Length: 394
Image (cartoon, rainbow, N blue to C red):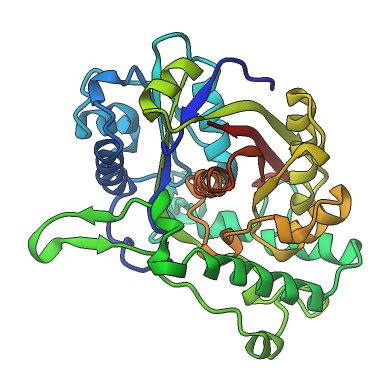
């Protein structure tokens, strides 16, 4: 989808740190985290809530009171008159939420996009089933059952990753090498007391006293030691992925301000704008999910009037190492110019906010380099993918 006259002010796409599965954020509602992070992000960027005209809330894991999620979050950040849609599209939620906001922005609009999720302690849904034995209900674990089986394809997500790896002729050694590269790139974002991460990362501070939770940096990151990885068994004896070469579930929040280019320049205080050029959506065959980022990226680039050779940097949501291996082979884009500050393969995957974090890193790296064209792309449940093309300029 080609986007026109829509932009993000420089510095106004952000992310919280990501917490490990069952870690520091596991006892907090993702709406509580969103309220705290969004309030702080807007304050630090001198965005008055009175300037906001709409809110899009992205999430993929239900939380208490999520029925009222959008208006409730708006009220909790002090914008009681604000409302807008809620978007839930699994791992593509961030791009879907940005697209929803971008297609409604007109002159004077300042649209807030927030994506938040807690995969820890996912809800167990109980469905009445009067015809069951003794009237026993049907139950579903929202997170774990979704990971374990795609009801259309009949396979788990890891099975999809290994299928693309095996059919594509990729090796376990290539997967290990890719993870080692992504970890080295992530480690570069920690240099100089996390100088790069602090360009976009908003610490989490929720509660007070003995119930206070504070998180300044990512939690649960494991170094990619080549010798240790070599000693791991693959999840499937015939597959290429170990637990080291797939992402881990996480908790976190991210956000952005979406407006028109003129207002973006005003809000950025002369720091530049991030023009949103196009989005792309794709669906591939059953259990081919890691392939989906390629046609999604192709669609977005085509609508932007660009080719892959016009792209300076790429970030991806890569739940499996094969995602990036396949993308690089199919597009010719070098692995070293993808995810130059790490990726979800390293820092984890809270689902809804994962894409926005990678977009924030893409934007800040391009800003540090003086601007350019960036592409984010990633897969999502149901063998789908979504992509976003941006241009960062002064």
